[in-house]
Image 1 (cartoon, helix red, strand yellow):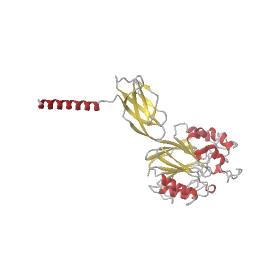
Image 2 (cartoon, rainbow, N blue to C red):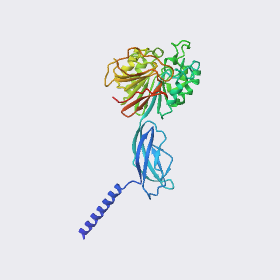
Image 3 (spheres, rainbow, N blue to C red):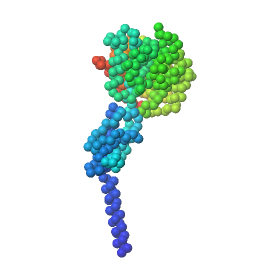
Image 4 (cartoon, helix red, strand yellow):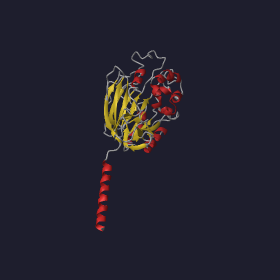
Length: 393
């Protein structure tokens, strides 16, 4: 009898084990058939088993639930999702709205899509303000910003000509690029200060620029700041050195930069400001920002964006001493936001690998978890292009 009891218990245990195995192997009432990121949205399909009592289902992104869909609608496309890491789950509901099943949680990363350019909007008093001639194409470049859902816009200085005055901002920049002000991270240019420009008021401290952009432009006494975007650390600097106590080693801005980089040891780092360290345009190199480059190189930054020279130019990764290096910083000069064009020197810089004058446009950047890609996007009717991909250091 004891042996029989043991046999019965063993058989029951085996049966339960088989049932548990079958339960684990059974498909879930709801699961993702596909899930991917497209243009900053989560898109895909869910699989819902029949006879589950489910009548509706919801997509959860992090802690946020999207509106419920009927079970016969299995395809989905979420609203735009901020760059970075997210968690997604599909939840099945009964007719009373109660949760009856859920998919496993899936991790997804949304890349940051960025548009960048400097030297943008003409003064309303300029003869070519209408933009039908060779200058003042800020309307055309602003139109490019609406072609994709950008996570952020980096403006590289000289957002508003000629003197960065409030009325000019209102009549020109605000009506074009200003439509995207809420996602813009600006850098201040020399025209915003106006101190060296003929006919501009002196000693303005770029107050109209800071008033227009508000907190997004950083403290008015500094004009430099940093932020994180999709896992990247982004540093925005002020190259109007005489306005803020210098840019050299030991200056307040350089000390802030070194401390900021030390406090944010991200895998991927980028920076931008107005005047470029290296340039083949007539304006030439700006040695005043050499200390910026040295700090960024020591922190293994990926690239620097600049304006000022009204050209498009890309430099191969290089050290602060202009030596090509795999761990060097790539530089993009994107001073073709619409105002006008400069010219190149007869002899280009040795590490200039792409250069164009005569095409307005923007630089589109995709910032991924450990790499980035770039593409120059010309205004409508133009064909110049430049693109590539690079891994973070």
